Length: 164
Image (cartoon, helix red, strand yellow):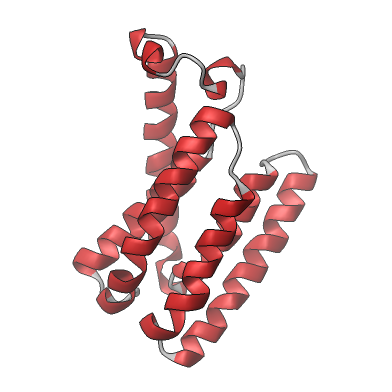
């Protein structure tokens, strides 16, 4: 892993509750709230200069801009939701450039596991635990915040345990 254990140690405890909040609100409302996206950006802005060397901190904003531009394009093409694109952009500065492949593997895992768990919950009695969640009622839609938030949390957690 390229992310340092120090950076992950600083980012993880602040980003984890936001990732959980994003997963929950996307399951419940099928929306990733702007407030959650802004909170994640605020964590990077405030904690980043402590967690990273200053030049690396500044370069991580390029990650934000690239993923935001890509997300806007994908959203315009109807391939991802606007909240998904904004959250991915807000999460991008937390990821070390050398860890992109690892993050994509984690994201693939969280997509498969999250989709399977969501469909299992939707079509079993587990649905009765939260019967009014919007994600149960949207045919053909999956709450990507579950996977996006999960992927960032897992990545930072792995960095906390095994970072450089």
